[in-house]
Image 1 (spheres, chains in turn red, orange):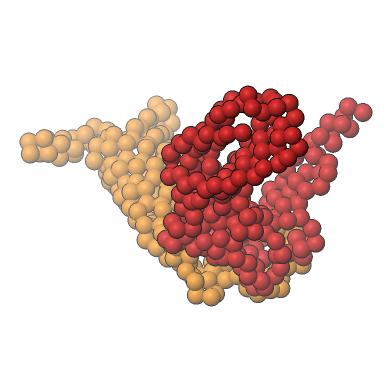
Image 2 (image 1 turned 135 degrees about the vertical axis):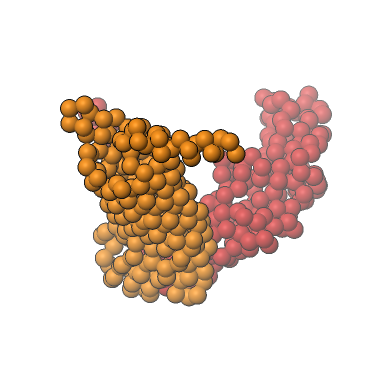
Length: 229
Length: 225
């Protein structure tokens, strides 16, 4: 029984990796992925960034299979073009992700440990366009001015939204929520050199009020944002 | 100037007393070149796959002893390492790949050598054993592996590329025998780093720098005169 459990755990946790060189040097019927990698809200290109297409297949209690399919680097203008060959089995199952070789400590990502995005509608002899935005980091220290005003059933939420990743992902952001259990003043990493949409939602006595404003913070800077309930 | 005169004047006297090492030797050897590191493995990020396999090594050279412990010489040689197609194309990829072939990586090199050597003579058999350390530097004309892969969607074709590059290495060797013909056994490392420009069938050029390092094990003969 124990050995069966251990075997299942191993199968679920063991990953397989593979390199598809035929795909990398695509002989024909190629899928073309092209676009631009930028920062500062699309105004500054990021040359020399590596983009790698990986096909992923996973299933419950099965090892995850990763197959490298294609590779390209951005040029001096941040542009890239990547060719790869989609196999029949890959059309039938799994998904394609694109790993972007940027330092997540330097550039903000929707995924804390890496830069990546998923491709939709992948087929042979097709061209996909994906422009990737990787903002540099700025920081917001959120200070709640009047914590005593928040009642037992009240909710106070602030969303910091900005453009990051591809247009398909639409961006992501940071959310801070207060209720009776109040967090310490958090310092949130946010996107630098682009507009940050700040939306405050206050729910008091069952009534929700929403306010919006825009912040713009330079890379590396920290600003204090005073939140008033 | 005085030191040079002394050394050249002393040399004939040294050889008369120590006939263990003749002044001139010709060397011929054959062996195996075992690719190492980046030459053997390839990473998906590499512009061009190396995937070199163990291969043949030939060499011929000349050695001139300046001193019982010091010699200089020159070597010319050729090294060939086949491309590992089974690591490049999955062996069971027969539905997609219809034909595959590749040429080998090879290098033709000429080197200037410096030897540090020490000889020992067995009393009973008069067999002389010489241990030497050789440092070499020179140039190699290197050729990249060409690839031709035919698939159901089209062909992958990369032509050969040639590039001359600096080459250097080190060797540990043993020479043994008691006649003018002696047997040698060598273990060494030789490396070069050419920058290739490889064209594909669409005319697109791949530019990359390839480390071509091999561990070389060879055996051969020397003739002393």
